[in-house]
Image 1 (cartoon, rainbow, N blue to C red):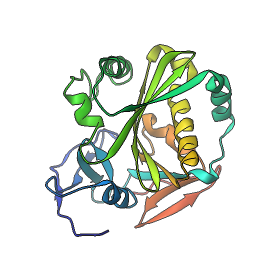
Image 2: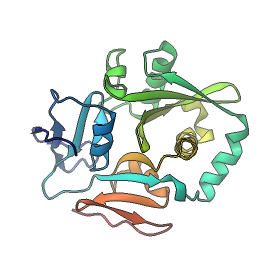
Image 3: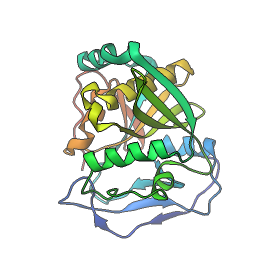
Image 4: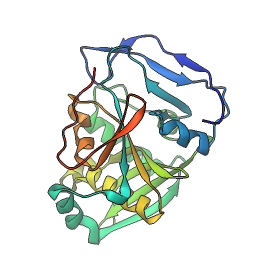
Length: 243
């Protein structure tokens, strides 16, 4: 890392992923000067972005939140991933959009949240919350529109980094769930990172025991940030919970 940074710890709160536990978070000083290079350095140490804020779980003995990244040059799709790609790839068009507010994107996001997370912290989003969560003033973010058969299917919000892509968030049309648009978007992001000659696709956190996070462990080989270093897990190699 190029410079020292002040860190702030949040108050303890209920864990959003494991209801029986509590969580605290480390935040990079909001007044710090951030850019894409520094962001990439922090991602490589297990941090994540939400809006303008960079954070990392800091929950004492509990270390259930595991940062993940994919070495895209070595990715090998499993049978289900190959099936999803074969089903839609010939009808797939992807349009690159700037990370700015558009009504069509927000309406899709609302439908997705109401269908998938109606009781969560993000329920009933507002037009102000939408860019506040997904975009940032200091990093290069793109909204990749995935259209299948000329119908807007999903939006993969993606940060562009010097040596990789970061999958910030993906939302999709609930009526097109049969196309597995979340899987389709991730497979496309992997190919896009390969096309750009980048090394990594960062997937955020995986929490063993959290059903909504379980899909992330299906992409192999996978690297996890644990005990201060990245560890690689190949096809079918079990990742044991820690803490």
